[in-house]
Image 1: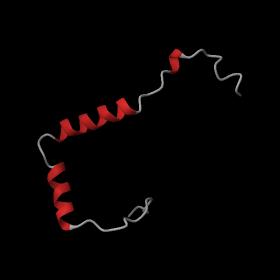
Image 2: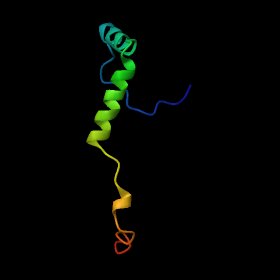
Image 3: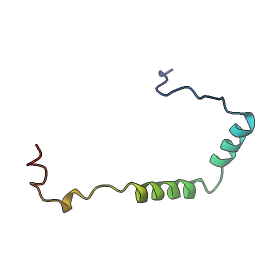
Image 4: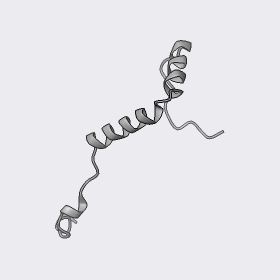
Amino acid sequence: MPPITHAAPLLPLRERDVQALVELFHQEEIAAIEADILRNLLWRHPEPHWDDFESDLLRDSL
């Protein structure tokens, strides 16, 4: 068993919460839900466009 690398929850999940999560992840639309989450994350935190910067941009800072 791998070591726990996160904090313990303040409150354990209730049975109804566990059931809601099970139902959420066993939907036929789970691929669409995943795509929507990924699209929103990319929209909120886009990758930087390093090619748009001059190559000497950081040279003066270093």
